[in-house]
Every structure is written in structure tokens, then in C-alpha cells.
Image (tube, rainbow, N blue to C red; front, side):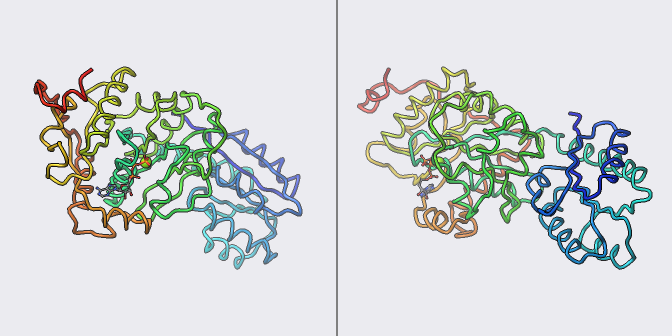
Length: 404
Ligand SMILES: Nc1ncnc2c1ncn2[C@@H]1O[C@H](COP(=O)(O)OP(=O)(O)OP(=O)(O)O)[C@@H](O)[C@H]1O
Ligand SMILES: [Mg+2]
């Protein structure tokens, strides 16, 4: 993908604006947003600055207030955007202060157009290189869906995403697509300023940079695209909106974990078509297994290939629960169980209440080990997909519940 370099110029002098326009015209692929800054000061443009690759700030290098505002701008957007400063006159002391603050370079004004054109080309090349590096290999979209409310999809999605990110080798994002009751941010004790709603409201603006600015970073390095804080209207969201959002997330991450709600709306249908694998989280009880059958049928009707479906048995105990033994499940659902995750109410509950991953709350528990193992399995280049469970056993009262 060829990207345009988004440049935000925050200027005080009309003559500088003319020079910058001239410099930008000489470089292909520049998307210039030029703003004259008055009394309001550059920091009131911080929202726009978050969404750009390069910010060029015009300051008075003798003004302590301007130097302070530059420091604040770099502190807020410097990890994402390259901040350059230009001034009419400046001494070595001002230059040192600015470089120490994290400004990428200072462009004194007499040579501004030439120097800026060179810098723009340099940043353009490095942004394209890093995007290309991010694109290879293209990310994997891994979905978690529950067969019944509370089966554990969010717990599994969040903890698997955490382990993949905490490994330190991969760029990992989790997208909370449970738009009404999403709990991913809460389960990681994050208070996001932006949410997926910003992307749903402006799908035409979504690219890796824009989406990145909407994500909140967890200490593990995991990028979280949170669900909206409150229920937003009742309007149906067109399914196609999922494509730019997932596409942008996949371009800039190795793994994109999708926490899905249990609704089959257009957004979900598109998401399920893109995700691979799709994990269906079940528990060992009649009601959940019954709904799992309905869900599996629904997924088949939607064209979700059986090979990319994986059953995850959550809260596994290895014991018989009511009428059901774990060994009965493959026959009941017509599929093998892909992986099991131990039952540990105390650890799961404490992790949720404290907003921490299970591994940080009870690292040596079988539950933490299962979640880590699930992540490791997904990180392997090709995982074996479990086959279908073969013939269903005949007879038995349980079968009547499942027969169609
Ligand atoms: N392996 C486990 N052992 C014990 N408790 C668990 C386990 N996994 C999840 N839980 C608990 O089950 C409850 C529901 O989990 P979670 O929110 O992950 O489910 P969900 O499928 O995402 O539900 P929802 O329908 O609300 O989206 C939580 O209180 C969680 O702590
Ligand atoms: Mg959930």
C-alpha cells in the first residue's frame, strides 16, 4: 500500500506558510494540513497532531512559553509522530533544549524550504519501510465467540492476547467488537480515551495510523481497541465497516484478537468471514451445549468453513457434571474439543475484579498455564485443526435434546 505522509504544520507567520507549501509541492505523497496558530496556541491542535506522521511547529525560540509548549507536544505525540521545529532566530541553547525534549530536528528559517523537502522525503521513506515491515507477514485474525452468555469468551480472548503480547516478539491488538457490553478494557484496568466508535463513525478515515491512535496500550504492549463506554443509538452498523477496521489492524499487527458478541448482525458476518480461526467457547452443561449446536448450525449457514472453527471447553474439571461427561461432548456437537481450559473461579474472578491477566494474579495455576498454552499454540506457524468427531453415538436421553 502506498501511503500519503500526513503532515501538520502549526505556523504563526504567513511567509512561513508560503515556504512550506512550496516545499511540500516538491515532494510526492504529502498530505499537508497547514494551520495558522493564534492565541489558542499549538496545544489546542493536539487531536490533529495525534493523527499525523509529522508535525512542524513554528516557535519563537527566545520564548520560554513556546519551548514549554513544544515539550508538551512532543511528550503527547512524539512516540507516534516526528516533531520538527522551525524558528526565525535561535541560539545554541534553544537548539539543545529542543533536541533534549525529543524534537526530531530544528530547521532554521533561511534554509527552510530546501531542508524541509529533504526531511519530508526522509520521513516518507522510513514510514513506508516500517509499514512494509509491518505488513510482512500479514496479521492473523483470531476470533472468540461464546456459545452462551458468560461461557468465557472475553476471559479467553483477553488472556490469550495478553500472553501473545507479553512474549515481546509480536505486535498484538485486541478489538472489542461487543459494542454494547464490551468489557475488554475493564478486564485490563484501562480507561480508554478513544474507542472503536470513532472508527465506526468515520470508516473512510480508517488506516493503520488512525486506528493506532484510537488504541490504548496495556503494560504488556497489547494494543486495545475498546468498545464504546455507553450504548450508542440503535442504528444497525453496515457489515462493510468491519473491513477497513480489521484491514488496518491486520496491516500493523501480527495478531488481531477479536472478542465477539453473540449476535449475528452484518458486522459479525463480515468479521467471521475474515477471522481464522474462530473459537467457539463452550462449557460442560446442557444449556450451553444446546446453544453451541444452534451456533454451529448458524455459522455453517453463514458460510463459515468448518475447518476454521475450533471448540474451546472452558471451566473444564475432567469430572462428570450432571448428565454430561467431557468425553460425550465431541459426539454431541459433532466436533472434537480443540483445547480445554481449567475451571478456577477464584483466579478468574480475582483477575476480573482487579483488571489483571490471570497469569499476574495466579501465575502457577492450571488456568494460567492453559491460557498460556492456548496462546503458544496460536503462535505456532501452522496448528493442527481438529477433525470432525465422526459418527454420533445413537440412543440415550441426551441425544433427544440435540436431534434436529
Ligand atoms: N476458566 C474459568 N474458570 C472460572 N471462571 C471463569 C473461567 N473463565 C471465565 N470465568 C468467569 O466467568 C464469567 C464470565 O466470563 P466472560 O465475561 O469471559 O464470559 P463471556 O463469554 O465473554 O460473557 P458475555 O456473554 O458477557 O460476553 C466471569 O466472571 C469470569 O471470571
Ligand atoms: Mg464477553
